[in-house]
Length: 131
Length: 278
Image 1: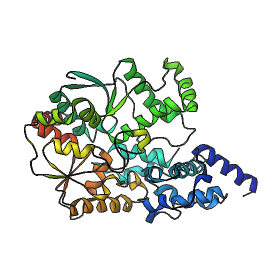
Image 2 (image 1 turned 120 degrees about the vertical axis):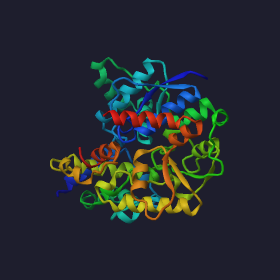
Image 3 (image 1 turned 45 degrees about the vertical axis):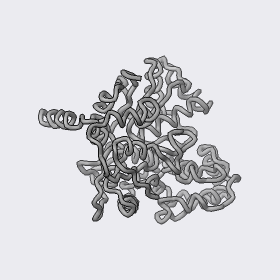
Image 4 (image 1 turned 30 degrees about the horizontal axis):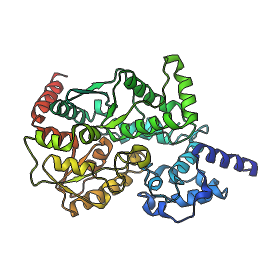
C-alpha cells in the first residue's frame, strides 16, 4: 500500500472516531479493564498507539475488530478521556465500508439462532459486523 | 405524582422474546400509579449506539421517537438497557453535536420533524427512583422477597458512558440495589456486576459470551447471590444460555417487581391465554 493511501486511512480513522491519540499516555488502564483482553490480538492501548504512529495495516486485518464488545469500559475508565472504543469502531468502519468488507453475512445467521435468542442480539450484530 | 403518563419506547425485543419484561413492567406501573403510553409507529433503535461520528441514518429512529415524545409533552421511558443506551446517547448528540443536529434535522425535514434534544429520557428504574420513590414502592409491596439474596447485574449499557447516561455512578451504582431493598430483599454486591456479558459476540465466537457469563455468574454466587436481576434481554440470554453448574436463576427486574406488587399472576395468566390463542 502506498504511503499516501495509508495517510488517508489514518486520517479517515481519526475523523470518523473523533479521537485524539496524542492525549493517550499509554497507562494501559483501558486494556487492563477490557473484558475481551484475552480475545484481542491488539488491545485498546495498542490501537491508540498504532493509529498514532500510522501503523494501521495490522489493525485493518485483525480479528480484534470483531471481539471488541463496545461495552464502554475503556471509555469510562480512561483517565485522559481518549475513548479507545471509538477508535476500534472507526477502524472497523474503514474495513466494513469497503466493497466486500462485510464481516457477517445474513445467510450465516440461522445457524446461530435458537428459540430464545433476543432480536436485540441479531440487530446489534448487524450494526457491528456489516454496513 | 399519580396517574402520570409517559411516552414509552418498548423496542424490538420487548415485543417478541422479552414480552414478559414489557408485560410485567406495564402491570407494575399501573399498580404504582403511572402509565406507559406506547409511542405510535416506533422503530427499532438499532441495538447499539453508532459510535462513528459520521453516522446519521442509524440515529433517525431514536430521533423520531424522541420528537414524538416531545410533541405529546411527555418524558420518554425505556426499559431495555440497549434502547436506553442508544436513545439517551442520540439525545445527547441532538443537544451537543452540531454535525448530528444538522444532518439528522436535514434528513427529517420531509417528515416535518425538527428536534434539538428537548425530551427527557428516563429508564423505568429512574422513574421508580425519581418520580415514584423507593419508599412508595416499598409501601405498595404485598409479597416481599424477605431474606432473599439478590445480585443486581447492570451489564455495560445501562450505566456507561456515565457522563451521558447520568443514571448512577457507573463504577459504584446503587439504583438496582435500592430496587432490591424496596422489594424486601437483600442486595448482594459483587465485582463483575457492571462488566459486559459478551453482548452480540456469539456471532463471532460463542466462547466469548460463554466465558464472560460464567465469570459473572460464579462471581455473583461466590458472593452469595441466590437470584440475579437484569434489565437487558441480551444479558439475560447470555447468562441463562451459559450457566454451567450455577444455581442462581436470572430474572428481569420487572418480573420480581410484579411479583412483589402482587400483580404477577394476572400478567402470567394473560400471557398464557394470548399464547394459547395463537
